Length: 357
Image (cartoon, rainbow, N blue to C red; front, side, top):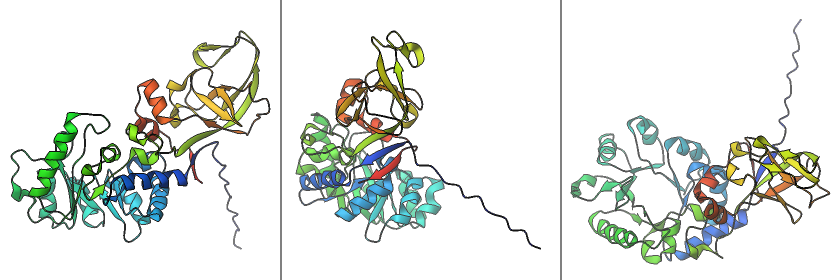
């Protein structure tokens, strides 16, 4: 007699926090950046899980819009993307190839961006195929220095894209012109199918910086890389959190750790499911804002790991289970708090459900 074992069915509850992501804004941002580059193709940096928005979703929507070139940082990111990378799309791994990356890289259709003489030698010795090469033109981060470089170093490589990276494109800086000049010299010295210099801010410097392929990142996701983006780049992400509890706070009572907020009157408060573990950092303590049906609901007290309290006196109808939008103006928040827009985006945690509309 056989036993019948009934498997337990586990229902995973929906997340109490989510990112509302605008497909229209993402595609519109890419199209504007593409158009600024003139005849150059426009790719997309989707490293750091698509700057926190979810690389798979970003790839899907931009590929449908016509983007063909994508960039990640590491081979771990490449392995995550490759199963959903359709034929006709290319993927470059910006950090190149370490010795421990070689087995994966050689078997992959993603291209390494070779950043040093050691990586070039490693790729040649292994009989690697198509690759990209990074030339350092003044950032002194990644890339092969042209100073004293033997031109024969790159001989025998099948270089798809020769690239460099701008250090100060987000401001008016003399190094921008120097890097443009040096990359122009690199183009004359080294043969490649394509040449690429401009990131989001570099695109805004004008078509001279575009070459054959641009590589925007920040501006795709709603970041203001330069003033030229204002009025042209739309916000893509809105963090949203669910109300867990509503309560009345009497005048003279405090809210949260450290009692940093003390009510000056009887007020209505709600605790919502978001915190600094989700990338909603402590800079929003007593200064952030939630939105509900047009009402502005100030953050009161400290942002904690998982929870935030808001003043909901202006929203008498709000109740447990309702959702609020968290104000998330990247450039404004960055300016006020001396934090980069990149940090705000890439800090968005994995507890958010990511919902594309």
